[in-house]
Structures are given as structure tokens and as C-alpha cells.
Image (cartoon, rainbow, N blue to C red; front, side, top):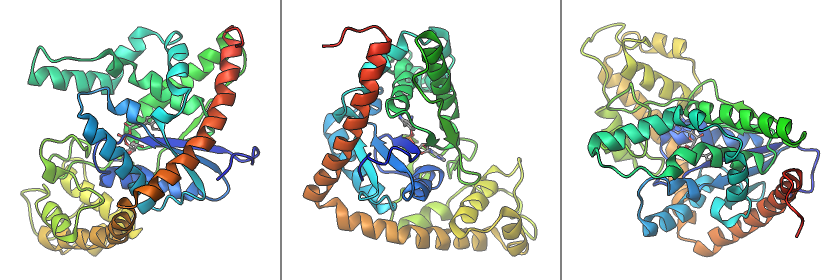
Length: 343
Ligand code: TYM
């Protein structure tokens, strides 16, 4: 896909290559990106620079980045219609992040939920835990990812809302301090699937870093694993007619109803009626059937493309080239406005 069509709205979004994508990434994010493939100029990044803000193993990052390209394609991102790029390949993300960090109040970063959660978790495991300043700067880099492409639309899951709000603040602050430069991007959070919860602790969001890996359903899990994980998902101690219903005091059942709803396209109300007489076991079997059916083609496609390193490298080369072209334009403009002498 080229960036010649300047009239089209620009859609940008990204995921971290920190292991396989899970059901939350799929339902809350990547699956919804496909709706922009026609009629929009799409940039879908794999943000490896974000992945190094917590301790990591370089060889895993290299592998996970290549696998993430294959997973995007498996989830329906057509590389002929969207630019799939690797963040560290593009000059401009860290440059713009630095400029934005000089406009970003320290207190605003210290109040970010993700920073507070991740640093508190690391300290609760070891009170001498190393917390890199990159973790604090993370949301500024994310703002740079978005503003470098002057994106109109940023589709994300609900957990990214606060980061998007900071991005909007920084765009406005730059425009006010220098002069009108950035569009203030709109976030798009899907009505359903925006917050898929852990299968074992449904008050926490589903996450790749959950210590209990039965909590997290990966898009490449096989049918047996899907059945096992959903079969052991936390529900409730009640039983009998009416036990399958969404409510605040039934977070596990509510989460499974949400997952089944997105997988089948039915509303939660319809599903509550359909399963009014069902036991938890029957209900979970139905959820597992629907999820297995939804993910089977994703897994097949993933297996078909992941081994083809040459193809994945070509995809990235094309995506990187288009992304870099757009990034250079914006970076040049920003540097001029900020008063840097042209080279
Ligand atoms: P990441 O890699 O954690 O997640 C990628 C996308 O998946 C969504 N998501 C979820 N949606 C529903 N339920 C869940 N349990 C769930 N977990 C994750 C996320 O909201 C996201 O849309 N900071 C970002 C990556 C990023 C980015 C960007 C995104 C860096 N720069 C610029 C958009 C634009 C992150 O860590 O996503």
C-alpha cells in the first residue's frame, strides 16, 4: 500500500511483540483493524522499542517480532492494503518522543495507571526491583508513534485510553507552543471486546504477562488447549436456571458472555435468554466451540506464513518504506517548528 492517497484518513495502531497475541489483543484490537483496510491509509506497527521498557531476552524479542508480523497477517491484516512496520526500523519515533518529553509534565507520567501498576508489581515481587526510566517515558513514545504519522484514527482496547488522552494533550500542547502542526487524533474503542478479562481472575484484564498461563488464551492455541482453558475458567458457586447472566458480582460469567457475544455476533441479552436453562458446563462448552471455530482459520493461516521468513521480511520492507516516508515528512516539519537548524 502506498501513501500517495493523501485524501484518505490515516489509521495508526500498534501492538507490542511480547509473546503471542491473546484473545484480548484479537477481539479488542487486531480483528477490528481489518475494517479500515479499504478506504483508509493504514499503518500497523510492531512496537519493539516499547517491549524493552521491562526486562526481556533479546533472542525472544527477535523471534516474537517476526512472529507478530505473521500473527497480524493471520488475523486478517492484508499487507497489500496496510503498511505493517517495525517501530525500531523507522527514524523519527525516538526523535519525536524526545521533543514531546520536553513538553510533558513529569507529574502526568507519574500518575499514569500503567506505570503505577507495573512499577508497583515489580516492587511487590522485589522491593529493590530495577525500574527503568523508559517505563515512565513509555506513554510519550506512544504519543510519538501516533503523532509521527499525523494519524486521524487510533483503534485500541480500553486499557490504552489514558495513553491516548495524553497523546491528545501533547498534540495540543505542541500546537499551542509552536504552531498548528498535529491533528488531535480520535481514539476508537470497540463497543464489545474492548476489555477481555483474565479467565482465572476476571477482575484483571487478560494479559500476556499473567503468571497463571491458563488465564490467557492465545490466538494460536489449539482446540484442545482452548477447551481446557475455557473449561477451567472461573465462573461462580451458584448453579441452576438463570446462573448464566451478566452482572457486576459475576465477573467470570460476564467475561465469558462478552467473549461469546463477540465470537458469535449475538448480544449479551440474547445469550442470557439462550442459556437461561443451561449449566455452567454447557455454557462453557458453547463458549469453547465458538472460540475454537473463530480461531481455527487464524491458527491455520499463522502456521502457513510464520515459517516463510522471506515473505515476512518482504512485508516488513514494504511497510517500513511507506512508514519511513511519512515519518520523515512529519519529523522535518516538527524539527523546523521547534527551531532546529536544517542540515
Ligand atoms: P498491547 O501490545 O498491550 O496491546 C495491543 C492492543 O490490544 C489491546 N488489548 C486488549 N483489548 C481488550 N482486552 C484486553 N485484555 C486487551 N489487552 C490488550 C490493547 O488495547 C491494544 O489496542 N501501548 C500499546 C502499544 C502501542 C500503541 C502505540 C497502540 C504503542 N504505541 C500507538 C496504539 C498506538 C500496548 O501496549 O498494546
